[in-house]
Length: 308
Image 1 (tube, rainbow, N blue to C red):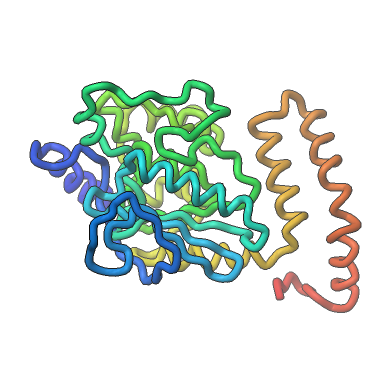
Image 2 (cartoon, rainbow, N blue to C red):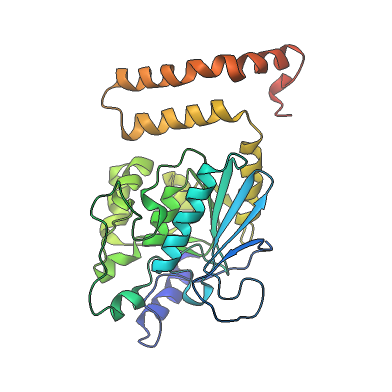
């Protein structure tokens, strides 16, 4: 399955008349209710000309990369819109979980290399990673709420880096991931070399980083890169269901535990520092959520491991 997809992508990348991007695409059933565009031209359908589309479903929001004609490769405007959407999600008190996916059968084929090739003067990048967006947009964010990536088709190069931004990755069995930019001399500057070793270990990360080889869903699951593998065409719905499940939990406790796990992985210098951070941020939750939760349990809720 991986070789079949890889051969398709290789034939595309080798054709001089095609855009130098990394991926392909798959349709979703979502109807967009909030649209953003980098084009003023009219198009067919509600999402025509829109590079980023979002939809709320209760306390869950889906954010869609909508450039299927270039396999959801990200340009500057799309990067800006992705950043704005995820920042808006993180600051919205009514939203608990976001799902990121790509329209038309692919998650994301990375940065649009055709645009890069056509630039006579290289675009200026923000050198200070604490300021401004990364080249792919939201890659430098440290979100305070969970983000789930629904991965179909190709999630390669910068697209893989966007998937790594997510807390969880729901991956279709036919999906392909990889550092495909290795062949073109395009470096990973959206967190790929930072997040990938943390997720799957240095040895496995270097296998992917140095070779640029494709990795299928089952190997990604074995590596810990994929959290769930679902049949083709079902990643989005499975990710939304997972998001709704996570959104139903007491949120202060969930976010404190999530923040502590991320801090211990990336920022803590010592075991003691990580333990102190966990304690300091966990104790205030006891009164706000743990005591009410204990009262519900004493009244019979959640017995036998039930989630309802």
